[in-house]
Length: 59
Image (cartoon, rainbow, N blue to C red):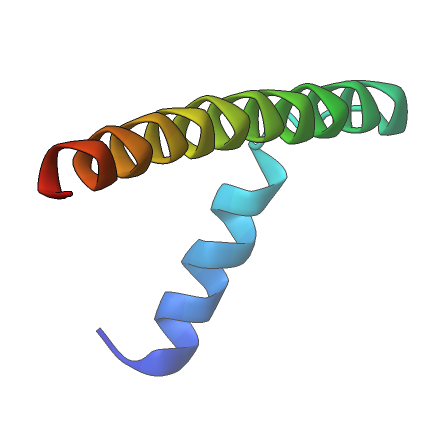
């Protein structure tokens, strides 16, 4: 398969994609950002707790 054939097939496949609307993309982006913040705060909180516990045990 040469590069031109490949690019034609890529273009054909891209016409079959069901793209989200702008509103859907915005909504999903906000959800991802909020979920990332929640996970980050959770992991950061656990890190803080375990760091303090380790500090207490090592004194």
